[in-house]
Image (tube, rainbow, N blue to C red; front, side):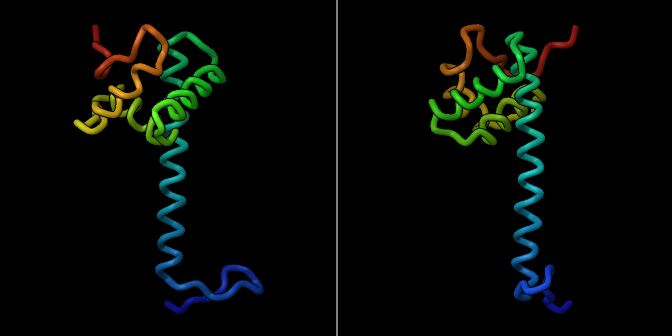
Length: 111
């Protein structure tokens, strides 16, 4: 496969650079999905608007010095039961910054 310009006037890109760019785009899509899911979870859990949930995630991110995408991933993983030990440790640092009713440690209990 030869390296060819994607757009007129653009220098040819190497295959590795294209693979890196595709990987970054895939990560961005995953992060956006997690952020959207976490906003929904926070909104449902705390009975707030999605805007309030987003601001809560931003506050947790800033107060815990953690990227928003990481906060979102940990909240989603904790909710769906896929959280590992590192996720539970990170959750421990987030809980102090969440509303007083707290965040469940695992997936919701099915009745």
